[in-house]
Amino acid sequence: MNKEGQDALFAELFSSYRQPIYHYLYRLLGSFEAAEDILQDVFVRAYRALPGLAPDANHRAWLYRIATNAARDHFRRQKLRQWLPLRDEEDGAHEKMADEGYAGESAGPSLELSLDVQHALEKLPLHYRETLLLYSVQEMTTAEIAGVLGIGQSAVKMRLLRARELFRQVYDEA
Image (cartoon, rainbow, N blue to C red; front, side):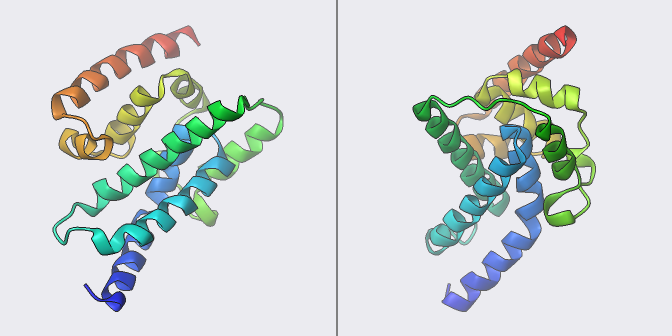
């Protein structure tokens, strides 16, 4: 693919997936600022990797894999810094801004999760949160999720089962 074709494909991918990936990252990270930062990183990584992308690749799964890996990198950096974010009055404003969508766009149904649901999600281990969000909110198939997470389809099904059980427990306790 030539440079013009790559640029056109990137523009199409950015236009189509910017908002859904932002919503996924916001729910995964629980932070408006982190989701925006990681979203930029995702599309920089995607642009750089575009020349090596197979012509028949599943673009959606490919971008979500980049997003998931970027979120994991973010969590790793947080652990290394030994920094734990503290909630304060401003968090409500950030969540309201995120619920309005990326860059002022309407959020649509994928972001219409209550704060109780968001807080329960934040208590789940990352690998369960990723799987549950990709399946329930982003409406991916188990095959797509397997590609995104780099695991087998049976592992995806097991994670979904365990994630749902744990989510119910955490949500009921709240």
